[in-house]
Image (cartoon, rainbow, N blue to C red; front, side):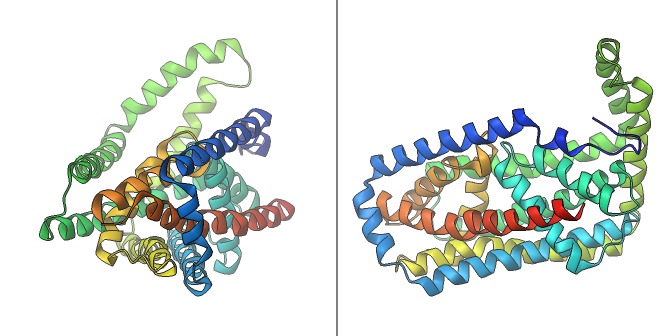
Length: 344
C-alpha cells in the first residue's frame, strides 16, 4: 500500500498475484493466436511472412519509437504544468518503462499508471497523487486523436462506399466512446465532491477490516489528486501543445500498419489505416497482455471486411504490425523498465 512518504510501494504495482495474471494472460493469448492461425490457414500466412521486406518492418519499428517519443514529450509538458520538472532525456526512458508496464499488464493502464506514478514519486519531489494526476491527464489527452483519426478513416469508408455491417458496428462503438469517455471525465470533475463521497462510503467498511486503509488517508489523497489535476488544467496553452504532440504520436502509431502492408506487398490504403488501427485498439480492452490475440483477430476481421485480401493475408499483415508496434515496444520498454528500476 503506502509508505511513510505517501507513495505506493512497487510490490503493490507488480505483486506476485499480478505476475501470475500476466503469465496466465500470455499463455492464454498464445493459444488463442495459434487457434486463429489454424483457422485462417497458417501455411499461407507463413509463406507471406517469409517474403516480408525487412526495410519496411524496420520503418514500422522506427515509427513506433517516434510515436512513444512524441507521447513522452506530451507527458513531459503535462508533468511540468503539474509541478514535476524532469529532463526529457530522462523522462522518455521512464515513458518507455511505463509502456512496458501497460503492455504486459492485463487491462493495460490499470498496471502502468500506478507503476509510473510510483517511479515519478521516487524520482522527483512530487508526491504520488501529483504523479498519478499528471499521468492520468496525459493519458486522457492521448485519447483525443484516437477518435479524430477514427473519424478520418470512417469518412474515407463512407466516401468509398466501403462501410460494411462490421465497420458500421465499430463506427457506432467508436462514436459511443467518443461521447461517453469525455462526458464521464467532465462529470467526474464537475461532481468531484460526490465522487469523493461515494469512494469514501465504499472505503469505510474496508477500513474497519484492516488498519492499512483509513477513510481520512483516502480523503487526503483524493483531495491532493484533484488539486493536482486542477493545477495541470489551468494552462490551456500548455495543454494545447501537449495535445499537438499527442496527435503526432498517433500518426506514428498508425503508420506501422501501413508499412506492414508494404512489407508484404499487400498494401492497405493509408486513410483506411486510420480507421482500422483505432477500431482494432478497442480489442485491447480484453484481459490479455496488450490485447494479445484479440487485437490480431480484430485486425484480420477488419482487413478482410474492408479490403479484397484473404484471412491469411490479413493475419500476415496483423503479425508484422504487432511485431513492429507491440513486441518491439515491449522489448525496448523492458530494457527501459530495468534501467528505471535500477535508478530508483
